[in-house]
Amino acid sequence: MQGLLLAAGVWLIAAPLLRAETPLAAAELLRYTLEETPTQLSRRLGPPVQIADADPRFITWFYQTDVADAHDHSHLLLFRKEDGKLAGVTRNFHIPVNVDALFPDAKSRTHYWPSDTDRQWSVRVRVLGEDRLAIAMGVKAAGQTTNQVIIARRSALRIWLPWLDAQLSAIPPNRD
Image 1: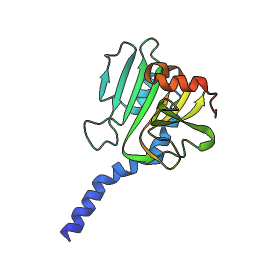
Image 2: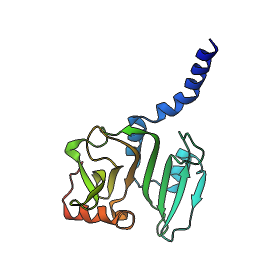
Image 3: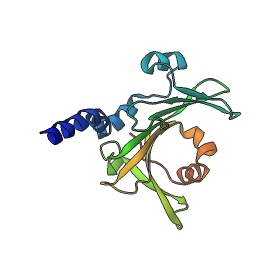
Image 4: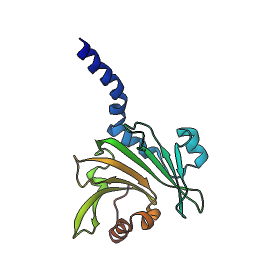
């Protein structure tokens, strides 16, 4: 009986983490338009647990929701210093999630680092608008899982992911 109670106790503690690590948690990223202001975001999310200001171009806000380790961050919000605009939102998952619903085949493309001919690492990209992308890190096809999804301004890729920026510039993207 004690073993059963212990197992139930572990389940009750772990259940919120498992519920958060679902495709629905990844889908919440689509609500970010990247036009949100820092004030709007702090009202929605609360204060960040940490702020990094060392980069000359960006300020990063770190959040810890649904994390199994106190050293992990569930969300990173990156703001451009030049104008204070949100450049990207990263969602990290402790347990890999399937993000097929966010990256349907007809609206997504797979790109490879460092190039299409030297395929060492993959990302699945969906164009959400003129300057807004969804990126599933390490995913090359439907059915695969990821620990990280990013909503980013297309214009910021030349700084973060120049190889992806070059590939997207060379191929006309699918658009929603």
